[in-house]
Structures are given as structure tokens and as C-alpha cells.
Amino acid sequence: SVLLGRGCLLPRKISMHQRVHVDVFLSRSMSPECPVCREDPVIPGGEDSPYRQQYLDGPQNIWALKEPCVQRGKGVTVLSGLAQLLEDYEQHRATGQGRDCVAQKYIERPLLVAQPYGRAKCDLRVWVLVLDWNPLTAFVHPEVYFRIATRPFEVDSMEPNAHKTNCRDSENRIPMKALFESLDCGCSERWKTRTWPRLLDAIRASLLATRCTMAPSARSAAPKAFELFGLDFGLDESWQPWLLEINTSPCMLDDCKGDYEEEIKAWAWEATESLLKLVLAVNEGSWKLPSFADLQQKETDNDAGPVEREPVERLFEEEQVEHPHCLAQM
Image (cartoon, rainbow, N blue to C red; front, side, top):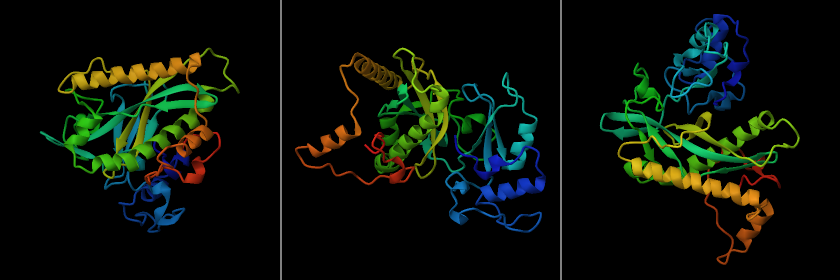
């Protein structure tokens, strides 16, 4: 999920004045001056502080409060400003979860796709296969599919289907290739150099962050097994991906209908088969996981000479992902 920033460290019972300071701090669109004390809240790191999350920002500083363990867009409340967020939380009682909930910054400037009914927001789902948590061994299927909202996007719209793509009244799933063909010719390049590398970094960081919870022991004694996750990402207008949620037991798309039914089901079949073959090959020993040194040697042994990598945008600095036991940069 998107980091809440410094505001998430505040105690639940804080004054409205403090809430205003956090609102001003988190939103670049608001006046930099606190309307209560007429002072500027201190911003660690200055105007370019990562806590600003400027790519998520917008005119209303909108946040989403989400109930855990609820599917298809249920239990999601959209609120403007930290004051409303905390007030709603104080009265919140999620079903079977006490007061537990997730606060997530809303993408106020999302990527919009032209549809017959207007320009609509979209998100994507990517399948991630985890073979082991210690050492962490995971694979990402190289293709994704998109979901387009079934109502035109407006920030202040009260129509749920304008904001949530998994809450739909008609089939809205579309293959990646079909979506790219409907957009301008530069989207494939932006996907390759910005969206996909950052998305992989976000997946890696998410798995590493949860590894201790998923595999608390130093070395799991469980039989050889695997787990498939469906990770949902939203895209802002600059094609930057933002993790929305991680789903266990993702939909295998057998219920897909509409114009792209055959393509979506064919993609799901191919993805399932290829990932299962990978699981069997690793567990049977017929395919060995390459080491970082193996991958480097493969580039050196290329008949055409060393592979010239295209410059790509990363979520982390290069020194943060370089490690002899990490294949992150390959």
C-alpha cells in the first residue's frame, strides 16, 4: 500500500489543529499556510520530500479507507483530508475485524482511457508466483491484464463504478495488448522504461516486507509448495504504478465475458500452464535457478557481444538493489 507519510505516526486522539497541519503537509495543492495558526508546517526534505507523494496529489487530498478481507470493492470509503479520515476511523467497525482498516492515498490524477461513455480510470492485475520465502524466490508473469472503470472519471463523482474497477456492472477486463493499441503510440515505450521496472521493484519490496510474517522460521520445513498472488496496481497520468492491494487465490478469469473473452481466457490458460511448468521443473530438479553470476555470464557469452541495456526508471537507487544474492537488476 502507499505509505501514509508522517501523518500515520500521529496518535488517534489528536487536535483538529494538528490534523490541519498534517493535511497541509501531505498535500501540495493546499495552501502552504495553516489556516489556524498562520504558520507553515515543517516539511522534512523540503518541497521535494517523498512524503509529499506529488504524483498522487490533487485538489482535494482524497484518501480511501478500506476494510480488510473484503472483495470486489466492498467496504471502501473515499474521504477528503486527514480530518475526515481520522473521524471516520474513530467510528469504524469493520466486519469481524474490530477497527482494523487500511488508509490509502487516492490517485487523484489517474491514467484515463477513452471509452464510449467518456474517459475512465483503469488499473491492472499481475500474477506473482512465490516458490520459497527463505530465500525469497519469486517470479512475475511478463504480461498483465487491465480493468477499466465502467463510468467516466470525475473526482467528485458519487458513482462507485467511476472510482472502483473491481466494482462493475459490465465486463471491463481487457488484455494489455488491446489496451495499448487503443492508446497513443508511445504507451508501449513508457510501459517498458517506466511502469514495468517500477512495478517489479514494488513487487520485490512488498514480498521482502512480508517475508518474516509469511515464513517466520529461519528455514521452513514445509513440503515443496508454491503460492500464486494477484497484485493490483493503479496508474497515474504519468504511467507510474502504485500498489493497491495483494490478493491471495486470485481470480482465474473463467468467468470473463465480453469482447475479449477468448483473449483473456487464453492468457489465463497460458499463464497458469507456464507458471505450473516452472514450479514442477524447479521441484523436480530439471531446471536450476540461475545465480546472479550465471546471468552476468550469459550476457558476456552473447555472440553479439554485451547486451546494451536501455535506461529505465527504478523505484529505488541502483545501490539499494545491487547485492550478490539478489537478481533484482537482471
